[in-house]
Length: 465
Image 1 (tube, rainbow, N blue to C red):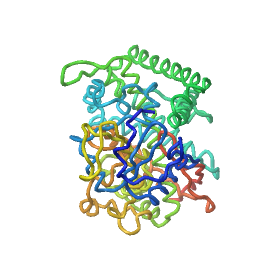
Image 2: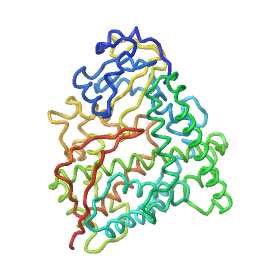
Image 3: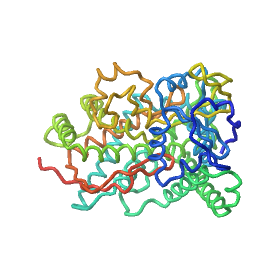
Image 4: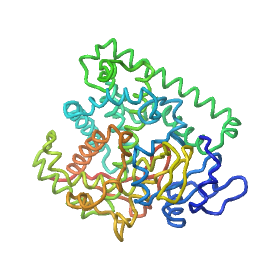
């Protein structure tokens, strides 16, 4: 973990009673850390300080304080916690790079071209073809309970693999996950453990250190081969993030990305690109099953747009399916798949004109609590209501109270890609299937780099047209 100041100057910020030596660590140690954080917010308020091992972290969910922290002239993204733990594999990729690192700006300027309307028109058919494979996968297993996370991983992994680097993981051709994904899962599991422990404890875990090193070497070898094969297969004829990074120049100075940084960007796209959308779709189906009236309304809209026979979607179709976007946004509000992010002051300053803070301090903007704050979301913020994202409702609400993709220049460059992918998948799923859940299921949340519903199964019942 990142060493910070002792935090004594933050003593005016409310804080729970500390335990000797371990500080506030027992407050957050839990098999359900996400739920525990929400409980801490309910108990200690929307601005409080936690001393966690080497770090002093201020947890923030008050919309007024968050608005101040979103001022990029005063605060910068802080790469700490689990992001710091995955830097050995993701390096100075877009998510894990510090603001001052040259490759962040260079990669961002180059990759912006890959998320424009022209590029998305190339990716849309891939999204549809892979969703069709998912639909057939479910049709071939009638009556079978579907592991939402597992099957949506198949879908999002194929989409990011093909759009990102022209590579298929054969997810719909085999029952077991691709061996490479087991390596990635192991890396994320180890990162989740290591970032919760002080450095000296991690040094006493030689097995974990060895596994991490071996998995990183294996991952690097896979992506180095993908990059090399791309060169041999004439990447100029292909449309992918990899082709763009190999060919495009930074519009600012004409430079190109190094081979190592291209690898970091591909790993970042793979990890973040499939996990977040996988979880978004899983949470969304959970809520649609819990709210059948919303599901029926969405199906009627899908039926009206697609008609009597399935067909390819256009961007015009997607604009007519805006209610599905509202459903997805409401799922992201309640369970933002990246549950928060950290910022630090660019210079010594004060918060709300009363709390002094230094450049070493870390503020964790806890999105799940921000997205449920009564100041912004009214008296019943825990309810699932897609109408919160109707056009009129959005115009009447401050934009800073809903930031599932981060803030400002460090917000997710692929957010439009992810939402399009999720909307396409949800459209075809609702067109082809009715959803049936287990009435005894109680939502629990798994947490690693992202969050997902734990052990969520459902059945997809083919609809009769």
